[in-house]
Image 1: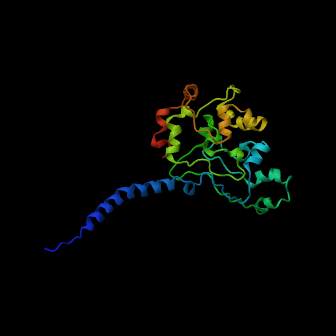
Image 2: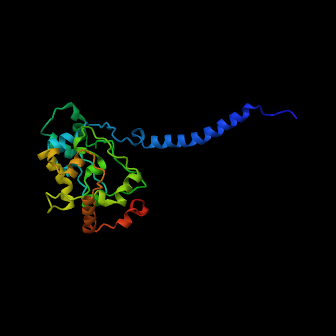
Image 3: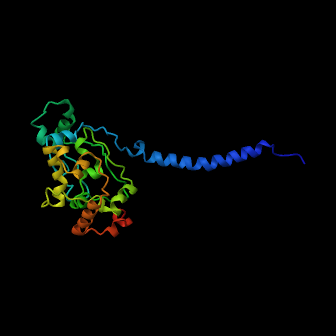
Length: 251
């Protein structure tokens, strides 16, 4: 009987098996890496808007409170976007002829809302409540990055489930209390950081707030901070064992 396969077929078969063993994990890792890269998550990628709004100018240089524009952040799941009337409360008096603000003036004159491009959003199957996080003293910058430094707003974190669970499984790493203002409520401390930043600059902030203002706060593993965080968990009545339940975010 004639030989069907040539001797080189053995080498080809071995090479095929080796390619499969190496290739499948490589492709999987490449896809996973791409899904977590800024190309997909848009983290650190500024998003153009109909009006070039600068958080740095408004919140840090001018000292406008976050809640002036995001009016429902303390009492609703949705933080809210500023209406044209909110913008015009200032810009009917200042920068009235600025070409950059023409979309705002047109919106006001035609009673047509500005179509802002959402920078931060979660999928429709995820429920997120801003108010409950604010009530526990979690600063905006933990999720949104260094908003006070943003000329054009970008996404500060990926909002992927694994990232959220880091806090839900160990909230003591992220909860902290500004010892220079011990009589403030957690909600007051969230926004007090921005006032201190405007008054003293980053160098004048406590270490935790300094990291927050720089967008580098990723939780603390210091023993003293963890102990203080656990005390705050008890103080705020947080049920840690329930935070990682699927039903907390997925109804």
